[in-house]
Length: 278
Image 1 (cartoon, rainbow, N blue to C red):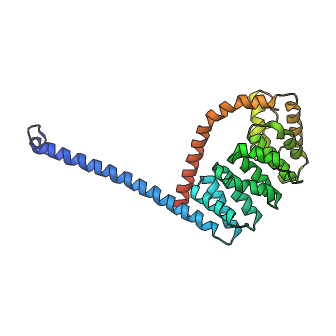
Image 2 (image 1 turned 180 degrees about the vertical axis):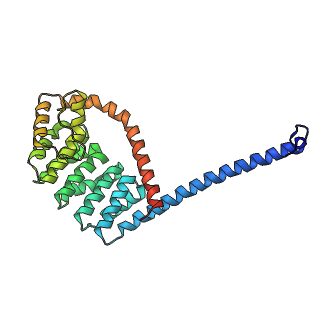
């Protein structure tokens, strides 16, 4: 452009600047629309893939669909799970357990009857164990009524499931049960009880400076018998209910941060699966 063309007195200069502004705005809109279409394509593809998994004859595929629905908080897939459970019995216990777990993570009270039905009548004790926790998450008030009106099955898994559910609601009545099965259960029962104790008790003891510091365990690990015994001793005489009540506001304030981090991880996972489907 010459000096004359760019000079303030040149009538063509404002027109060129206007056209440039329009081109820049159009480019920004195109980029935004492209990003929206990419996100839409990813979401549609992922939703279709999950929904197709529930129609598979392979229980491993159906179970995988349930875990994806739970991990990604997919409402359409969760609704499909509810329809499948309501329509008739799912023959595979591991799939039923995954379905119930996904419903529990949805937080939708309308799914409570399905969890309650599993608590009362599912023939598999591990499914009932998961259903207790799902019921507590879906509707705490109805869970309390269910726990008061239901005679638990005579199985350790029912005891562990009910104790875990109480602890998730901030009620310490199940701690001794969890400590017992963390010592006396099968390997899988010991691990399940340890996970519940890690989530519900370890942080409380750390907060008040009573966690046995020589033990460094992570979530998902089975606690050694020595740690279980140490935690039992350190819980003796504590007003655990009061400690939980005082700690809850801090947990509530921290929840949005944890949820945002979880959301970022889920979005990253969807993008990676879309770009690298194999």
